[in-house]
Image 1 (cartoon, rainbow, N blue to C red):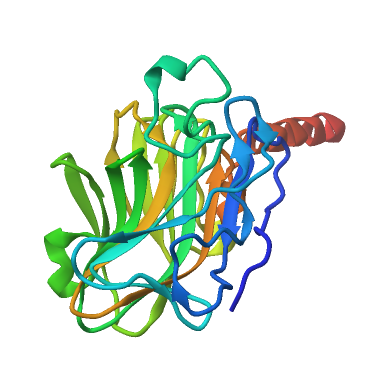
Image 2: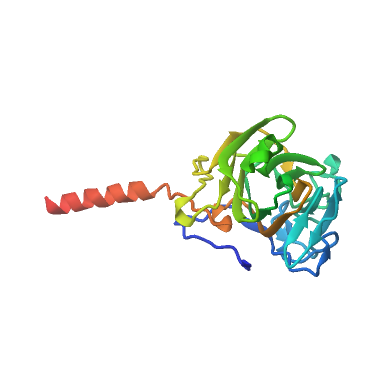
Length: 280
């Protein structure tokens, strides 16, 4: 099932600087993902909040295992993955000397502040080992969401801070051949990362104001790195399949999580007091 637009839940107060970076349903001809630049968005310059004239494209990454292909309107990875940067005027490795200008590599990056959200569908095969979506800081993986290498034999969904920073498992063992929807949250402001497996509407939430959430697994995260691109990758002897990718900044609604309304309790209390006064 293809999702053409993000589902937005109603909130009383819109979140500042919220933007859908991009949506990709992998509606490409069968073949290598490298060079494909479809989908919606991936042309947002986060440096000045503007849409750019061109979109970033997918880079095919081979870790020595096989091809990273589109097949039947979905991405399949095997011993590698696909990387798509958030966009800006220039794609590249990043030049810190240009950070004060609006023409440097990855002007679309999140710069260690706010929130980054990913929503994606993942289907594992029997021969798949590790497999997940990663937040990239130019060429370096910083965070991983999916099935970490720590417990891939049990297909245990979880998240991992790259470089030995810690792993949190959900205890949810994924069934081979079954599609799971996952939502990953990177909350720089509240020092937290989280993973949801098959989240459900209003029942699942992330609050950017304080980091409160209903995630299936969370980890404290104090990194101040940039998030410049999203990578979908896997290892093993058989493919992992990906679909319906959304990348969003700062608004959980854009990945179909709800946002608790902090004023709701206060408004309810005031209504009760008014009713009590009238009865008197």
